[in-house]
Image (cartoon, rainbow, N blue to C red; front, side, top):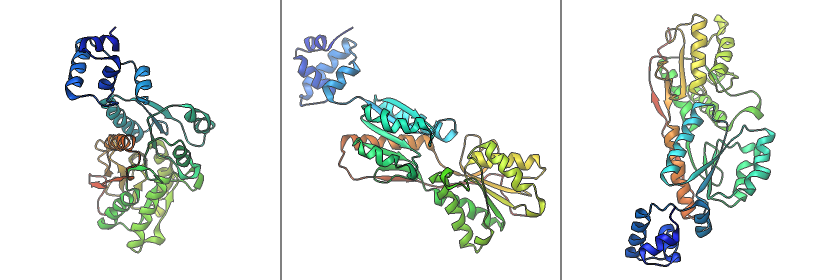
Amino acid sequence: MSTIADVAARAGVSKATASRALTGRGYVSDETRRRVSDAADELAYVAHSSATSLATGRTRTVGVIMPPVDRWFFAELLAGIQESLFDLDYELALYGIREGTETRERLFDTVLPGRRFDGIVAVGIQPSAQELDRLHRSERPLVSVGPYSEGSSAVSIDDVAAARIATEHLIELGHRDIAFVGGSSDAGALSFGDERRIEGYREALAAAGLAHRARIADSAPTMPGGYAASVELLGDRRARPSAVVGVCDETAIGAMIAARRLGIAVPTELSIVGVDDHEHAEMFALTTIKQSPREQGHEAVRLLQQRMDLPDAPLERILTASVLVVRSSTAAPR
């Protein structure tokens, strides 16, 4: 295996010059940089990560903190982050740990303070746990993904607008009895993003003079959660809404399955809208608000690279567009 000394000898420069040329740390003329780069290619030289870290003060590693990746959104987001970091020759250290657990608390108390990262991407951080404040105190470049981004550059969808647009679509079709499936009556269990989507739903109803008709069915943001909540919501024919907004597509698909099990035709008897444009949304012909978590992952890494290169640069917040995708799960009420 070739060493930096071999590269320096082949290029006719000192080891220090060869190191500066390959790491970009310190001045080297363009001609010398090309000569060293050619020598490294000829010798198939690969810099050892530990040596590079010592030379540059960087670890070439980014920490990613997020909920467990057992949901489509987080899996897609992680794929985007990983793709961009790989293109930049960065490694990824993933901590996918559920909020409110002892393991999560230990992560912030003892694990993260002892790790060396060039930067951190924090996904879905909740304001109640002060986790973002604790990450700020580490004084490492930080980018957040999600609606809560106090003091950091961030990427997110406008959750209020997403749910408002979804609800307005149903109102424009003529629906007046619209329920929201998702969220939780337990404030401690309600995520900040879901809370914002409930806010958007209520805004749309209020603007149409329907605020008194708002009703929210507790549900986990999953297909089984949406199914269970919707079986209860739709079981009483006399109190059944004519339309449902799901806090996410997984919940909306669960509601759709519940409706079919109960013999309720979608969309002739019940219209359903989701948020996300999940990979299964087209298969279920679900009307939804489209977002691209993979692209959000790419944007998060781009912002983080800016923070790592220019720590004092102004913070930047990217709100991805909320685009309504109309399929055949919605129609005018009978």
